[in-house]
Image (cartoon, rainbow, N blue to C red; front, side, top):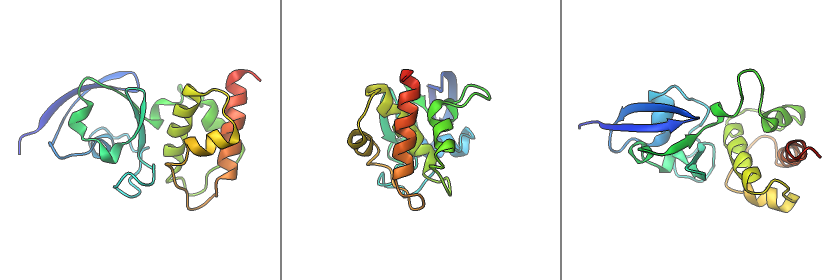
Length: 158
């Protein structure tokens, strides 16, 4: 099987890679590019652990082919921090103990980033709805919601 050459932008950096036609974006990110933040939880788009932002849209990378990233913008959890400076969402997840095992955390962070980019002042109900595509087996959701609320306040300067 011949590889597909892909040129894309990941976390602001131009990236080129070869992938198989049936290889998912999740597999490319993890296995070819070493970006292991996105996790495979289910492989069917039901858990959100592999969430990334593709051209400004939240997607499950297990449902997108690596070849489909050609010419597109991909944002992963690795692109959230700036050097040692954590993104406010990452900082608030730590402060609110909104993580335990960590499998779902990157997906929740990316989903929350997407939510706050579209709605910088969400209600609790809007946060819960915005994160509904992400599942957690460890923490429950209250700490995650509080962390997102606190980060939204911080990002708005409230």
